[in-house]
Image (cartoon, rainbow, N blue to C red; front, side, top):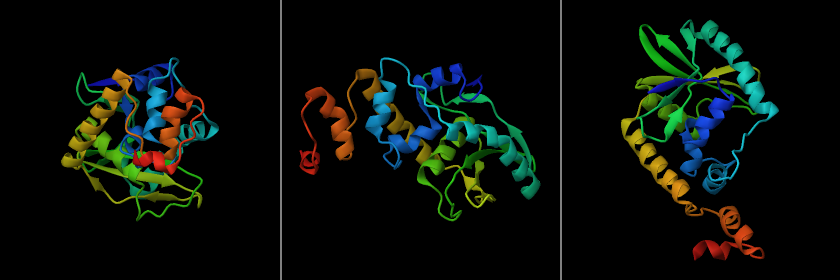
Length: 217
């Protein structure tokens, strides 16, 4: 199932608030060092929808066309930009918007694009980015993909072809559904660190300062 929607449009934000996007999989699985699962839970259960916007995000979207063009020049592969939101199944909360597709001979594959101010070691793929690509492969039914980085060296760095991992995708689906049960029932997910404990309990209690001992309770 798919819906045509422009990235970061009002409709795109509406759809993201109704489920879990590919870029959020690493958060759900506790593998994103910038955001915790409790922070994501708080965003999804907020009374008013939170539209996360920044110049970095806008630049990333703006730069996609350039990175796609450079990918075509360096690889000789034909590409196709995507503006469709994909769903795994009609009632599934997992959804995602791949940046683009490329064609390896006649086989259609997923192309995920990342712009970053950091230096990327292409031999060490970011866990969240890998999970995001795997979710897109599962959502689209495609079997192969690549991640293309434009990093602080101002060069394009592209991973080797990454194959779809069906077993991993099934695990992703289960964890996403488990997280969404927490959202729908307003039950915070299990805290994984001190910050998570504070996010859950500090506001409610008003005076609690979580410490590392609380994590053992």
